[in-house]
Image 1 (tube, rainbow, N blue to C red):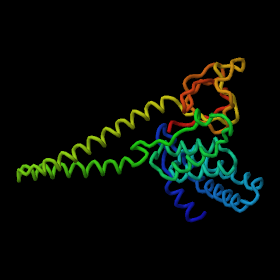
Image 2: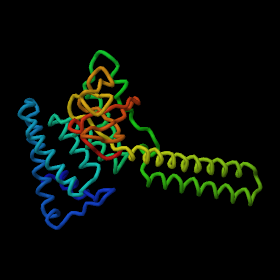
Image 3: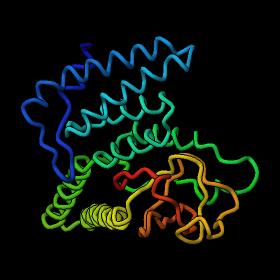
Image 4: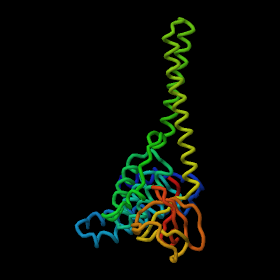
Amino acid sequence: MTHAGMILLLALSPATGPPVTPGPSDEVDAPAVLTRAEHAFTEGANHRDDADAARPWFREAARGYDELWHRGFRNPALALNRARAHRLAGNLPASIAAFHEGLAITRYDRPLQAGLEDARAAVLYPLDGDLATHCRQKAATTIGTRMSPVEAYIVAGVAWILAWVGLVRFVTTRLPWYLLFAGVWLIALGVLAGLWVQDERRQSRETAHPLVIVTHETQLRKGNGVSYPPRLEARLPMGVEARERTRRGGWVQVELAGGDIGWLPESALLWTVGD
């Protein structure tokens, strides 16, 4: 196993959300699974001049990383490896899903954010028409995607201390500038708290509607059956993301990023966690 692989394995941590507790055999096998996945990824990279020869190796690497992830060993580094392996294997929907699952545990991770945007840019929208405006997701720019909770606590702590310093100095000196200084930091603390509350509410709204990803080109319809007319003229390409609203009879009602609502067959969708 490479030094980087050992670091990755040591960094693996339990998943957030519903716990998946690795058993003793999982812990024993994890280094071997990681070694096989790394070897397959390296072999795929060695065949980078021949995509047909490289993809089976990347698929094998993706299977290994998926196995570790589903056993409950999860962290941003493993999520990034999974997503890259699926992308290089030619499975764009699985790559997008892996990026989302990584961001579900660390929304502020910059490599995962950049990787997701790059994968989204690879979705093959038709050149004619405006389908991309109906479907293309925008990158989230909330405070939770810009700093970790630890960083937020540090900033809040510093603001609180500075506000108290200003108040104490005002009491002892009666100079109004210290009161103004304290007020500025109290306002900053309030703004920070408000942004976090707003971010949590946004997360709750989005996770209430599971994210789905189109796995192959399909038609968005006005009802849950092929007899219903198309909602949009063009077919949705592989990799389009949407939010589930309800299910009925093997069909899923979804909402696209642009607000369009229609029905897609369950067989054309890949589910993932909320981002």
